[in-house]
Image (tube, rainbow, N blue to C red):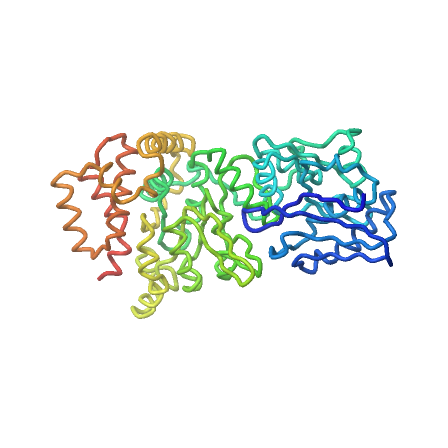
Length: 503
């Protein structure tokens, strides 16, 4: 047989477009050409595949080899097509029966010794292959990582020779999760703190519980050392576990960056304030997911919020509303999910001690004003809960009374989340305007209170809706069907930073 067709998948965000790897072996002077809108890494496949075949005890055919990666207008990069090209050559030169690769998709990079090397984006490819009803041949590590894909039929092997034996039916494919000692954790994983370790700060803890229960964005503002970062690190411990679809999306996004998530815990991303705009929202000639997408389904924690470039922060405004980011480049456009929960912390002024009862602020009024102006009004408008974190009395640091732990708070959060899913099918933070008024059940007194507050605090229509969503969450936590006046008053109290800027 002088022609062979092998199926593979390209990588374009969470999509994995199908690629046909066509191999034609003809007589003539020895040559090896690959065509099909290739990047440099794909062109270099010729040398890797030749050495891998020879070192795997196969014969490299003497003739004119032409490999076409179709469709030709789809950009193709990386070493993910090495395996498909090698199997196509073996089938075209009659060293492997063509029947072995029917209904099989191949993803993997080849080492010069014939070993199969892991590549990024395998989970997205496995999802697409499973939906197409195909089996997928992968390196061992990738096959173990892709076991989370429901109904997947993977063929994992450590090298090309072993994979050919598996395809012929003479060997066993590797599958299932990697052993615990071999699992790699995400290098940016954040240490989760139990709420019981945080002494005092009842208002901040209450806001943290409401943020977890309703999926709201939260800003802590206070002097250094008041526990803002520690409070933020408690949030993953009280969030409910993600559903299977969320879990699969989170793993697929993390896999595109070459990292791994452990278990079913929601991601917690905490980039430094020196992070560029591209690292936050994603970028590159072929756009890769940024921190906001890696935090999808979890938490994006921005410490020292006012130290981030304002241009970078303003790029978060659209994803905070839509829950996705659209990255357009000359070669392709990619859409990544970015439904994250923003938790931020900042000092009230450059020196950090404005309003502190124990230390005197050294900043002038103009410096404080300029510092707060680093956050745009539209961004603050999208943060539902804004809490002043004050310094507790020294005696509270040595208070031996038991603090409520994450397990207790998390149980209340799970009950509130279950109520929201049963009532409206989504969290309160994602509740649309028409349904929001319907599920709040405001009476005349509540409507008048909200109307008066919107005029006095100069709240936008978006801010009013966010106040209503927080009030709805407060009622859910307290297990009430309707939103009461006290719920609205508490929700309005969490807009104090916006109110101070308005005056």
